Amino acid sequence: MRKLLLACWLTVVFSAICALFWYNEWRYSLPTPVPQNYSDVQLGQHINLAGVLAQNNGKPLLIHFFNPDCPCSKFNIPHFKSLAKKYGDKLDFAVVVINKTSHYTPAEIKDKYGLDVPVVCDTTLAATCGVYSTPQAAILDADGKLYYRGNYNRSRYCTDKNSEFVKMAIDSLLNNDTKPLFSQFALKAYGCQVSEGYCKK
Image (cartoon, rainbow, N blue to C red):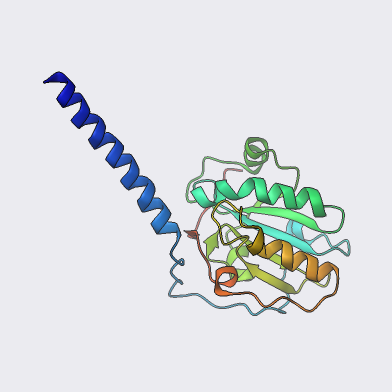
């Protein structure tokens, strides 16, 4: 009888874990709902930056919109760091933290995720770039114009080599090639919805 009860209990626990995993996979495979007050920002529009991000050294800038409470953002960090390592001499990189809670400082984010690029908390920059989901990338050309805004990869784990959208955008920008024609998987936001957030100072 005990073995039967134990087997039933383990089956229930295993089923609950599987259901939770399936729900998360399904939830983040759907496009992020567009906010009601969303104002689209067109590619080619000049983006006004402030603070440390406003320092213009003649390089393009990749802004990584990151929420440490978002599973998709956490999965994306190794890929983002690999891009910063590969292209760091040709592009500037920065992380903009958008977080619903206040238990992180920029310094804590840098330390926790091993980042060696500027990390800032700016609740307005997402709207300025037309971003309403994390993780998302916004690439500005050397003149500060929005060149690309969208997803890193079709895969949550950034493992699909055929859909490395941000890498494709970087390569086309640096090589002055014709901008790639991206599918909805690149340009339609997927992930965690952005809401007003802040960080500890």
